Length: 499
Image (cartoon, rainbow, N blue to C red; front, side, top):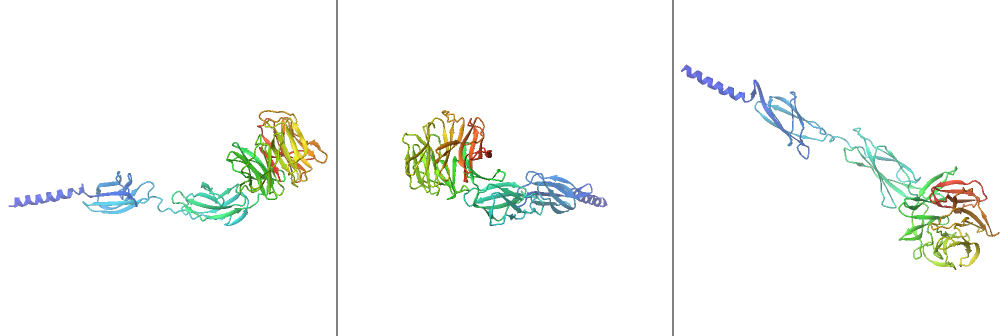
């Protein structure tokens, strides 16, 4: 009987010992910790997140499903940490008992989740509603970031005259100078700020207005990408060009600017529907209006053609082949006032200040066999100045009192198919003495003087000088009408006017 009792006790001990061995490693009791790591909000699994048990510092990594497991972890109080680059570390407490299987889920936030956006930009200068600013304006604003992140700014400038928007991005400074703004126009600007972590923060809108009048007395043409573009400028005390303004668009061909101070408008020629017409604009280049319509401007060479304002600014005269027309500034009242008797083309015309005298240049279809004469407003011949000239003629301009006429002539009488001039010089005609006099401009040999115009006080002449090769740099000069040293004003420029 005692022997049977011993066997029974031994069996119980064996069973009890086997059951404990399933939850122990050696003499250490263990359990299991499983879990998953996902993105907060979207719950997408995060692969290769590092899972660390503290205080043992055992580690493992999540699989493609974001799952992990510690199969035989000693029973203990644990802090389980999930870490991954670009995410905030996440912690979960675990109290592991013998034989237990505990599952934990980590919802990891992106590392920038607690980052603060920059403050809303404050527009400092110019103050909202500022008027009469120069064409270059320094914009100043301020913003800050509590996290000390770099702030990137985006500037937008709109206006009150078209749908163009100036956009400048990735600015790190809090100032920006915007230039070549249009006279008399209102602009609106905003700043957006971002730390490239949070969404942009947009400022309020602020406005400013540019002064209305350019004050520029010189207008001229520059050639860019094959197009004539009209500019205006002033001159500093040392004759350096200042306040230069582009008046016509780069994509259009516009030339031969003529300013009238009475109506404060600039007239010019421009291509329109494969024809050349007279247009007007304000001195800032705005409010462009077409004058001519049914009868466009035409002659042997449209680069040489010229038209004229009336002194009052209410009318124009202009050539079209062998005819001279008069038209009102608003495009009404078109009338023929003169036609050549020999079929020659009218290339240039100019109208005296008292509107009683009109000077005309005519030539054949090649630009030669030219004549200069004056007519009255009824079209009657008054004075013949040059007739049957072999070489090129051009540059017609009457003095304010109508007693002097300035023009150019190629003294070589050279003729060519491309209308090249070899020695173009400036002359004046005195109506009282009926004499022609060459203006001594100190021009160099092999150059041409072109497109002369009287200065407003008529003490000087403004004109273009360039090599007679036709492709070299062209410079606008001025020189006293009684002779003296010439002075260069505008480089790479043609077709000047000074009012």
